[in-house]
Length: 267
Ligand code: HPA
Image 1 (spheres, rainbow, N blue to C red):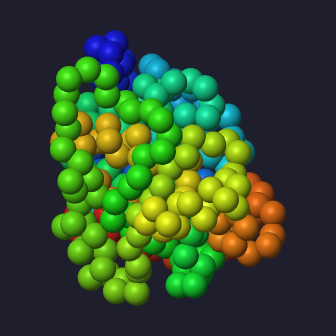
Image 2 (image 1 turned 180 degrees about the horizontal axis):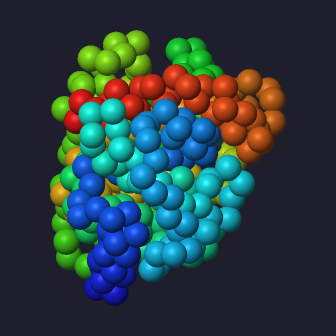
């Protein structure tokens, strides 16, 4: 990480507070592809702030990834920063761009971040398309890390056990799994999917791990949830496509939105 990246996040946080007319926020949620439709269930919109109005953000390149921060007031009166869209490593804007949202949220006073994503399921024996899976741990195969230098951050419990327990209390049927991240933007080959199953992965995607690392560096509690949108390449015989990923998100939006709303109000 460069000092510049932190400074930029502080500037973005100041701009965000002034645009929202609020001094602090309780939680941030990063809505991955397939999750954007679920945002509507979180509460009343206080402000919609386009990424382009905040230092260091740029409009996302991918369809289905939105492009703004929505400030939401939940039923219990909490204030959530809802990131409708995120930056990915495969977009080529560098790792600081990928974690800028999380750093901005931390600089704005947030102590908890909920990272959502769409993922391929590596265990079709037990996972159904459209099911949410709590991320219990990750394997970072992006080859990148948001931290540069001699800051040795402990990653023993990246995804908070306390927050996972809370989700299980809300919905005991939700499974847990290990999320593997590749850089993308290609989907995986069937041989890579077999490798990842052997390595102990349960879901495969192209996001989340770098944001989770940056969040831990900033001392935030992290909750990670994958929406399984397809079996991993070669496991079903069907080719993969981004439209299918978005469609599963649309179909499951209400369930995921209700789940997230309950989580946020019990933090
Ligand atoms: N692989 C990688 N990323 C994904 C997938 C997948 O199968 N599905 C949704 N995002």
